[in-house]
Image: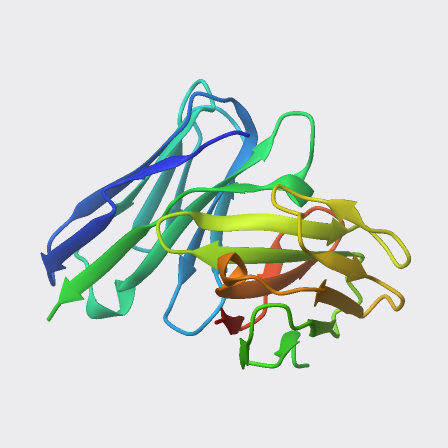
Amino acid sequence: TQLLEQSPQFLSIQEGENLTVYCNSSSVFSSLQWYRQEPGEGPVLLVTVVTGGEVKKLKRLTFQFGDARKDSSLHITAAQPGDTGLYLCAGAPINFGNEKLTFGTGTRLTIIP
Amino acid sequence: NAGVTQTPKFRVLKTGQSMTLLCAQDMNHEYMYWYRQDPGMGLRLIHYSVGEGTTAKGEVPDGYNVSRLKKQNFLLGLESAAPSQTSVYFCASSYANYEQYFGPGTRLTVT
């Protein structure tokens, strides 16, 4: 089983601050996805990165896939209360497609107004 | 367009009882999945299906069975519920192996 460790597990910061959350593994993935999940709902896909070193931006969110395709980071600039939620990374194994995603343990983010 | 729906939203079972969770999607997706989510463990794949009439085991299949008799429906069955199956269950669907769309979840408690 391929494991994805996310850090920190919990993060609480003031509105307007910047933050970075990390997703690490000893395994190589063909692609990596980031999801956000709000209470009582299912995860919603934010982005997919597929190339080592790739950087994708989604408004104030910046996602990076590690050069070796074993890790990823999510950076949020000027956090807003609407960013509050559980952030999950998920990796697609080399020998399979997204039908066998491995999900990380999650980072629960709280933005304080 | 309802996306992915799950029935029921909440359920309490006693140990040894059986039940079926229903997932329905109206996006004509080929692939469907069942996950469980437990605190500190993320989402773990139980079973999945790559098309009508097909099913395959995921990471944690023991104690669960599934059926995909119709393309739009994916059923998850618990034949003899155990307290270890207390969890939140999510169904998802996707077009081929692209982006997965998740349902709102079913919260199951086994006492």
